View 1: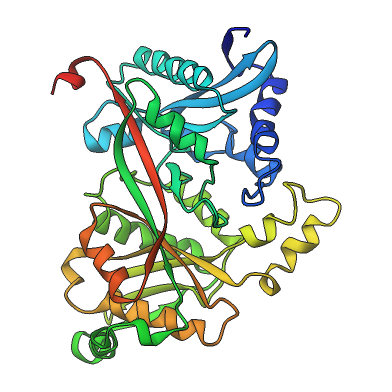
View 2: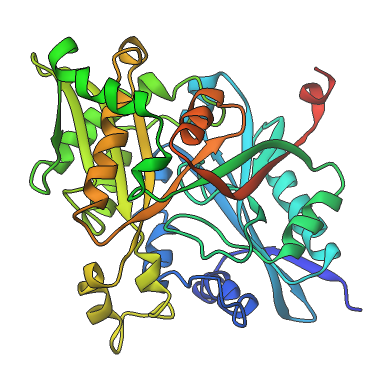
Length: 382
């Protein structure tokens, strides 16, 4: 067979081929959800994506005999490295035909670029950060991915497991919760939730579309307190939050966006749960025209599931039952909204507290993803 050739994305045509590859690779899959092509183009734009205010990236295409057979990105998040005092590089946007030579060539190209940036390892896949699509699916192939979840055929995992120098870094778990079924919840959760306001003076309120950007600042306060010690934590700056707020406007539902705060107005906890718009996107085939825009505008009629993207409490308030209060509110909303269940996470396999909480609410793990690393230089000797 002709040799695999790796070249960086240089032209508008290259970028178009980079974006189009997964639509071809997954064309026959009943599970893969095509993202909007326009959204992908904007997300990859160095001018429009806030990641490029503190990071840099190079996209690569793999060709065999002139035909595109794979893609990958190599990127460095300087804000991440400054926060963690690390020299990590990342790879992401991984797509490929079932060919071990293609994956090996893509990984080598990404590594070479990251070595030139003085990185000591390569972690991924993560589409710029762990807050976006991350990991390789290895359990749950028969379940549709929810919003901001990747889906891969089984050979992706098989190829990554076989790839030279690529080792497991962390597994990510997705928990399914049927939040309309209270019988699966431990009674103590309701007791804790009932005491939050009377005993601790903490109340729960819903976010509004008008004040969403201000509440995202409150989310940042909780996120930096509750998640900063987690593996893979990526700090947000103001421009990241501006972009995040704009993205959330498209999926905003006041019933599922909530804040808990003290009588004095201090933010204690935040939950951002989004309706699973993938149920709509699956019918649009990546395009707004001719009727995709109408399906998206009428999405509330079609969506029956949610994804709990963030639910966290500041460490100093984690004994107050605030998390239980937000969990119970999710069950309350399931009684009055079309969405009767959904998925929680991802949650790190090492996060024992959150995984125990999911078990306490009758959750079951339905998807598992693996994040890999390839380490070199002085870091490999530690």
